[in-house]
Image 1 (cartoon, rainbow, N blue to C red):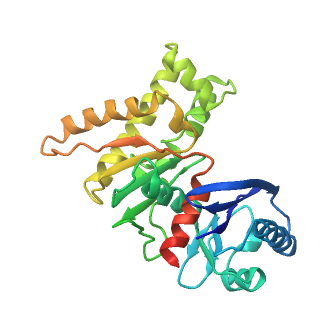
Image 2: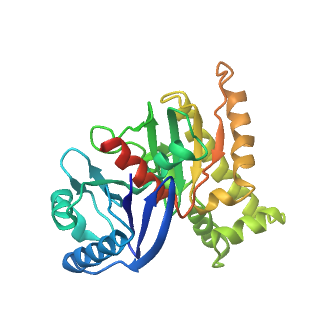
Amino acid sequence: MTLAVIDIGGTTIKFARYADGALTARFAEASPATLDAFYAVLSAAVEKLKEAGPLTGVAISSPGAVNQATGVIEGASALPYIHNFKIVPELERRFGLPVAIENDANCAALAEVASGAAAGRQRVAVLVLGTGVGGAIIAEGRVAHGHHLLGGEFGYMLQNGDTLSHQGTAVAVAKAYEAASGEVVSGQDVFERAAAGDALAVRLTEQMYQALAEAIFNLQYSFDPEVFLIGGGISRNPALIPGIERHLDQVMATVEIADVKPSVMSCKYLEAANLMGAVANFEQQQ
């Protein structure tokens, strides 16, 4: 199987050729401002990828709530023109190839299950920590989309009267630090200050760990995955997983009847996650 692989982002669209388990011929283009320009960029890229040999199909990672049954990208994103019409058959007509599209967070999860940190696992929860908390649920090796395509939208979860997205990210920590200190900082700044013993930074990062630990505990005792994977840029911070683990120990001590401690790891893939996951989705769908 040889595929053209596309990762649609709000700023950049990434392209690659996939064959024999590897991504090659990778390049990127700026995300266009109109649907016609979008079609032109994608069509030109697929033709370029065909130059190395015939393609089996086109695998795409996209923002939004992708409805696999209808071929419609529902919801909203930074590219409003890709939503709420049957885009899959239109792309298949233009490419002359089968097309499979999946949500970007779901693609990242599929990549981890196919060949990443959760390879071989059948039941996995992936939390992606960015501006908010997104993610995906893998059940029996496949994405659990949910009736309203809300599977993995962990950021909406309420804890202590606020959403997990407002408590469980480096962005949220930075905003809280700025509100308390009046100083403009990044999430990385706050974590570095916490490591150096800054009292405010320590308090805010510990609150973030606690929010994530409670959410993970709740998901363990509802969805019951084999493993939790943490993605997003913050997942490479060496303090993150130990911080969550420390607060999971406290949660386990509070709920004495609980005897299964969640297993938490970082995702393997970063920039290639969506591309590799789009391939895994194509394999499942086709």
